[in-house]
Length: 291
Image 1: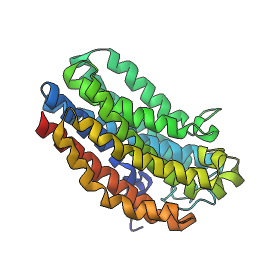
Image 2 (image 1 turned 30 degrees about the vertical axis):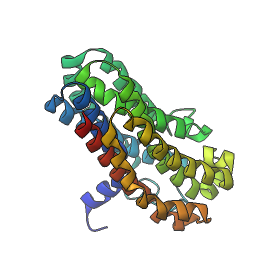
Image 3 (image 1 turned 45 degrees about the vertical axis):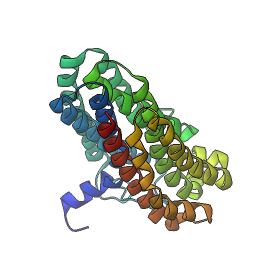
Image 4 (image 1 turned 180 degrees about the horizontal axis):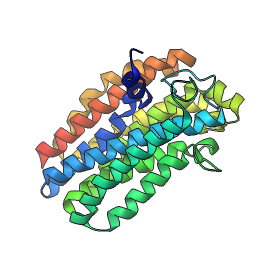
């Protein structure tokens, strides 16, 4: 790491950012297919999604760091656990990112409706309470549910709602594969961390299920996402283009299925992020063209 800025960029965990970008892209494509995209709202929604993602990452770094659960973990840079930044500065970074999301989100809610404020508050709370607070739900095995709901259903259908000002069946349907691939990303992360999470008393879903079932869950998320593409294509034929990303699933699926563990899963995590980005881009493009 070459300088002060570099550690903060690494601490923001840029490899997780596709989980914020993809639902906004797909939701905006749905809006274009069923109505009209308001481009400033699309840009503002993307800023909100990215700021919440970064804020959540910093919040997790802070909470895990002060609890001591990151001490033996492999993977991305941990600012607090590795002594690269003080807990208070990481907490401030988390709150600052959330504040950016709040300010930009407020402008969107003024244009669309106050119901978006409630959604925003729920997103902030979910991001902080994942590993923060007295009873973090990420430590109780509910992290994957949070990711599927907020990075799939809420983010995708919500991004379409920003433009259409209504929830549509297509928006909800398209949100499911988006949520499954976002969940696959977390499943890979938690599979890698089973030994360290177990010793730290962090009962993630992977710890509760064990390696075998966690590997099957990962593969199920990938398969489920691709199986839903033909269903979406019944309404939006060019959505079938998302199937072109299937070759990118081979490498991470093979690694997970073959028993890769620890640092061996880091390339699978990176590959899953690339798959998520490619799948989302092709799905969004297909929906937009079909519309």
